Image 1: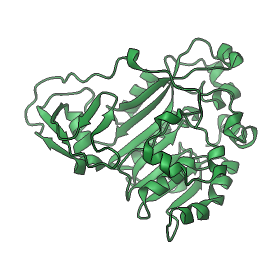
Image 2: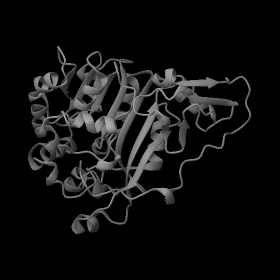
Image 3: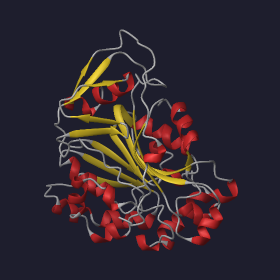
Length: 349
């Protein structure tokens, strides 16, 4: 499984980088303003050595986590994994996966610290060394995980198809993939993909958005949703010249393991009402960048959206009316136009 790409990344994240400030671009950083309030509160409890060595491009921490089993792919020193450990509660369980010795050493060193900080009688988190392309090799069973997250790591993988196949293998039916990553508006040339610096800075391994759509369909997920998207600015002139004219975006995506999903939005006359019962979301809940459910207000939805809120862990928080017995044709379900998207800040988390 180990490739030259894996070895380059181990060196970059294990030896070259010792602090988030060592990054030469802001691609592997996130806008602090995008972090939900409950995550900010959890961050206050995380040991500074963990946060000092954080490399991520978003905040892929979804709501409704109490009691969930969560897998963090490419967990690094464990910042997101420890946030999840706090949010899932003592009855939940978190597994962090990484291939880099130095990162895992730091993550494991602080298990007892966080167990005490969270007031738990025993740890609800563990870290395993392995490759995100082969979760079976490190004992992650079929249909065993409620949620898979990843923060700016899948772009680094030399075999993204295997990564996504493994994700949907280990997710339970109705489970969710929620991840932030760097996407490109075109395919990146192989010579650039082989550049260790550009790869380590999360640029040259970025997925072309249309190839990502096709890949997810191939592994059995015909519909995914973008929850946020922001333009990445490259302030390093040398790197900007080397990477060419490609545009990069930091994108947070959610996708569900649901057999009922179709490859376009279809109209079955269904509607959904949000109950306002998700912690931290009393007035509205955003499923994605074009579905904001206001508390108590019926909203017409396509069959896929009805399944996403009615056949997953969100079902207790929604009332879905109607079924798929009558089809009314395609459903006009469009994302937010690109013109409404805002550039990301250059500040790191």
